[in-house]
Length: 552
Image 1 (cartoon, rainbow, N blue to C red):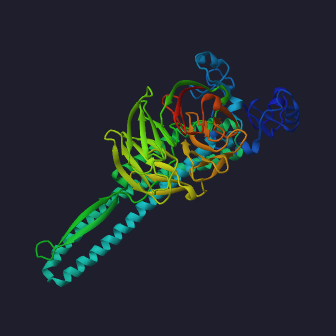
Image 2 (cartoon, rainbow, N blue to C red):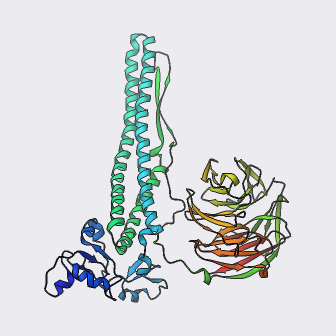
């Protein structure tokens, strides 16, 4: 704090000493009961946020020491620069002449405790604590199993020794010594890691305590500035967790023996390493930096410019996607065909006779994944070889699909949304809420968006299945099918019956029609947003597709 918080700053200016009861971060002064009453009704200060002195004293010292004034100009922060991710005073503006995204800091800190950034910080701390606990628990269990295995081997060695004569006692002692050395060597490694984890656990506990104090007692500005400090520290802790799990230090260590019933060496001790048997929690697709939720860009400013209209000459188009080289992919359910078109709109080639083909998504390595509708499998196709690469069996019907970090998330009808790991083909239920027979799904950050044509709705949920918002307005959108998102999390949906494309803001509160029947839409079925090119590909159920340039 810049002033003495224990006495009223206003009275002190009048050479009167009066104890303060509240602190105003805007005025940087303590206020007594009388001055606080005038302060709260004054037009100049009526909207200032005050904190009881008793509550302010409960905040940790490191939070109170975070400067709320510019260290260079000694003036209060009034702006926030998106480009440099830093607060600014009015004099700082001179050094930010080229920055177009200067925002009033009052807009940013408003309701910051309820923001997704604050929630992400809390969840990340919980996640780090849980990951450290899991690793520690796993290592402690490994210590116990090492002792148990050592005891079992000792018993086996002892039983073998009894069957031999007393001359083998010397050999037995040598083997036991080798066994003890092996256990001690590996135990030292685990103890070293456990000591490191204990220190990390203490630090994370401190983060948790600080966040609780901030949530209860800090001002909005203090909260905002503090989480900007904490997020940098959390990146270091997350990198540490990843380095541990990706190294050999968490491999399961076991001691094994080979019993040889001869008079030279009747047991051989080996240490066996195998991959860890536990997983850690990670926030899905967390961005490299946790940003405080800045005001959402206005979707009213978004414009579409038609680049080309493509006569694809296909029927029952049920999926579309774009490759990195600009080629376009379309899947046809009733023809069981995948068609690839060049960037100029001309046909490249077809892939046929690969069972049912519903939705299609590019998964990297010149490969695409194709859902099969009612057939309980997902096919992976090699585009270079133009043939089936592998077929993955699953336990449900599958329709709309999206690819994310080595996983496919697909609409599984009565089983809701499911996610399959392409590496080990393990399946996880994301949500048990039933989706309609023809539904599509997409993802952005830690959110999922899916359509339900039966009740004309678009739903946003998290990866735990918790519903965040639902959009339903048949006057605007009827029979929603294909769905995609842009780089800002805005949602694009086709209305199959309403013959349009509607954009919904990332918070689900605003919407706008972008395309209609007048733009050539006739029973539109699917669409795809190219995040690297800012293009929108829209396909009718039959014959025509459209490629637009998107500007915001």
